[in-house]
Amino acid sequence: MSIIDENGGPSAAESVHGAGSDRVPEPPRASADPGPGAWAEELIRAVSDLIAIQKDRLAQAARAWLLRIGVCVALAVGGSLWLGSAVLATVRGMRGGFAELFGGRPWAGDLAGGVLALALVVAAARIFVTRSTRAELERLRRKYEPPAENLDGRAPTTL
Image 1 (tube, rainbow, N blue to C red):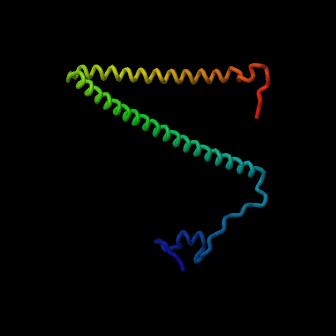
Image 2: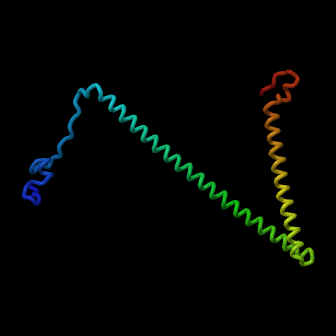
Image 3: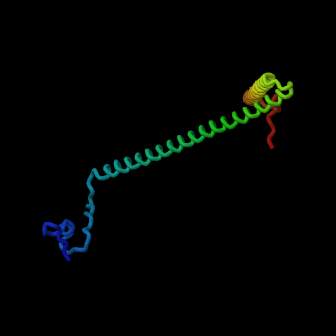
């Protein structure tokens, strides 16, 4: 069976494979002696492939890291907004309660609610600073002071 192109001659497939040939030509075989530079070419090709793989891995790791950072930032912003709105709602409720407590005067409720809110922020900051200072001092004490059983000169006992 012959395939003829629009010019009346054999098609490109027939001219490559031969007219009526169903066989695919075999790829050229490597010679038994590749030559002195063949190993260097193969080494260069392998190194370039390895560099490409490492570059792709680094790019993927960077994308994953940036995605994690973005998600963490989004969660921090969302959490901060949520916490801020909760605090605001609480302080507004306290202001209303204080206003009723002070005879329906809204300015007195606003003043008392603001003072209480500031007092809560100051108390939370003081607690945080005190705890972090104690933890740091304890860490430094453990780092620089010898254990209590070594103060008398005896070796520590082990179980």
